[in-house]
Length: 316
Image (tube, rainbow, N blue to C red; front, top):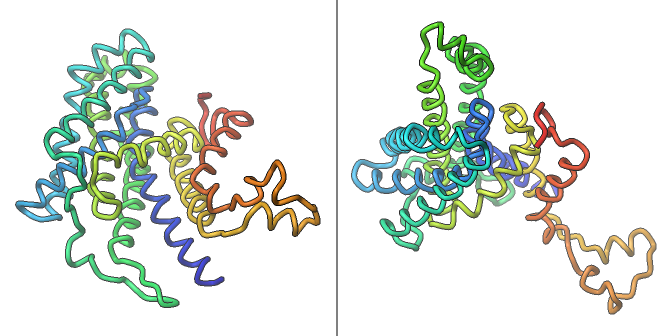
């Protein structure tokens, strides 16, 4: 039991903080610009592939830095020459624009790198066990993922709440005319925000690629769950995204480790159900089988009882 709890806790932390790495950029873009970027998961995938290509020539560590910068510049150009012109037509037009961009990026990735998983691996120094407990090992690379995620949270929180840059960005949202009169280029601020948000998505892809595999399906794998994170945490709330990521990571990881069926539950509470009756299929369903859909069940409950999310102020 102790083994199950400890390793489920560790894997839940890794998965939850990986979700936060991806959700942080999306939260930043929405909180600062009001844009719900459907292409965010595709940008995350693009970051992994760019890092893979760079790593073939100069190794993993330069790719860790260069790939987010390259993809961040791409995101800035998308805002400058695409999203900025679409913005005047409202949020629906923005959603459709980012939705189309997601498909364009996915097709571009398959055209350049193919449809198969590429051989993108962690550096040799991290391809070792960090420690062993109960006969199981915890990889050093997963500990590295934890450290990067926590560092991103701390840096973003400090920059957005304690720095002059954060004050200018927040003021540009609520009082753009006043910020412009003070000599700041508001469109440039928004372009920078979208670029940084894209760079954060790319960084998540660079980190996740070696752990989860770099394939065209990686955007679909984590894309939907990231929107669950930002809705549950509260649209635009960085702290909410952090808490919701950990909550969903723990919920999913612990659920898939529990082999407890509804049939066992019925027997434990004294209900005599016929295993061959109308509800026979339900009788054999286990909590582990429900694990992948639990975040979406939580999403529905949040939308019904608290539309602003756990820490948000805007309703969905």
